View 1: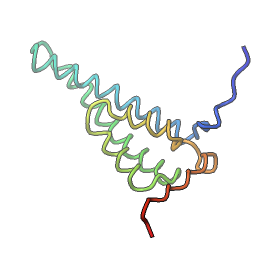
View 2: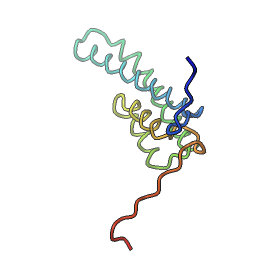
View 3: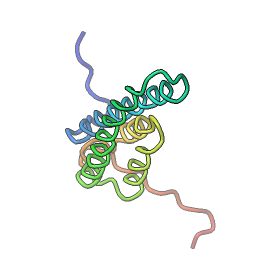
View 4: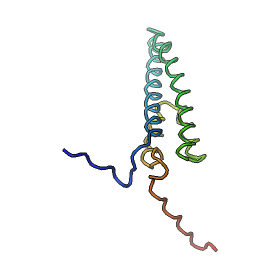
Length: 128
C-alpha cells in the first residue's frame, strides 16, 4: 500500500514539534503513574514505591516539558496565548495530551513556513 502524502490542511510536524509531542506523552504517562502510586499509598495503603518512583520521574518529565514548551514556542512562533496554554497544560493530570492534540490539529507543531495562511478576520456589522 503506497504511503499517502500529508493532508494540505495538516502540514507535517517539525523536528521540534515531534520532540514536544514525545515529551508531552511522557509527562502524561508519568502523571498517570504518579496517580496510581498515590492511590496505592493513600487509599489502599499497600506501598509507597509508586510515589517514590513516579514522583521522581514525573518531576523530571515536568521540567523537561516546561523547557521544551518554551523552546518550541520561540522556534515555532506560537505567541503568548499558545505558550501559556501549553505551560498551563502541565499542571492538571494528562492535559499535556490535550495540548499536544490542539497544537498538532491547528498546525502549530509544524514549521511556521509550512502552515496554511490564516483566514482573514470577518468584518463586524456596524463597524466603522
